[in-house]
Amino acid sequence: MNIRPTAVLVLTAMFVVAAASMANDAYGAPPAARKLPARTVPIPSTVSTEMQALIGTPLSADWNLHPKSAAQWKALVAQSTATSSAAIPALLKKLDVTREKTMIAGVTVFIMTPKTLPPENANRLLVHIHGGAYVFFPGESGNSEAILMAAYSHMKVLSIDYRMPPDFPYPAALDDVMSVWRTLLETHDPKTMALFGTSTGGGMTLAATLRAMQEHLALPAAIAPGTPWSDLTKTGDSYFANQMLDNVLVGYDGVLSGAAKLYANGHDLKDPLLSPVYGDFHGFPPTFLTTGTRDLFLSNTVRVHRKLREAGVEAQLNVFEGQSHAQYLFNEDAPETKAAFGEIAQFFDAHLSR
Image (tube, rainbow, N blue to C red):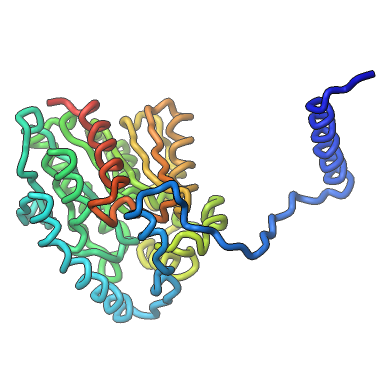
């Protein structure tokens, strides 16, 4: 009897699986964790030179800090704020975006207006929630993503400068976002508005949508949570698989876990308004998700995408080669940055009324 080589491979694989299954049944052993050998992961040749430079940077020096007091948190935030704020004026000038600071419902907001604002976008508004682990990037230091979106979408962007811990823990940030959203609904058609943000901003985009549903408020026409911090607990494969590979967040057990606890202020970290992946996504607006293959939050993003699809929601998932957390924001000249914002802009254009 002649047996084809492919058939031999299939039979062998079936035997291995069956043997493993019988061993587990016999001994009641759970599947074992995978222990990996030490290895070197090269910078991918499949991305732009601009992105290669970002991927090749050393691990974030501050990822494993453990601030012990409010004063230590504030000192850490002040250090990063100074660096981020210093880059904003040049970015505004380079991308031909103007900025206006104002107040809505007692909350500070920044309105970004692109130099080119086509008539079809005159009534459209993109509402931005900045990232920063609920602690970082207050004031203008949190404006960079909003500036990029205004430039690449040719739409007005309103960025919310929400309150943050240690002075204002949960639910202050979400309360501010909801106060702004309720006020905007008084003067804007929700079909002409979208909600977006990256990292914490992505998690809050999801949480604000859940809360708007709870409060029976009109929802935005579309949302775009970028690599959302959708689970404040260390749950999900990439928290482990991409640890020390992501050169931005690096790992969960340092600043990130401390910020989660600081923001939650004793609340259950799996509360859907803190970790929205545990919420009910039925009735959500069309959603555009972005992440990267080295992103510590890759699983956060993938899990949200799967839940949205299971809830019957239109959801697109854009995964960039080689990128660590939110690196599509870091260089406005990178082709990947232009692609990310261009595709989100196309998504909004397809779903927002004029």
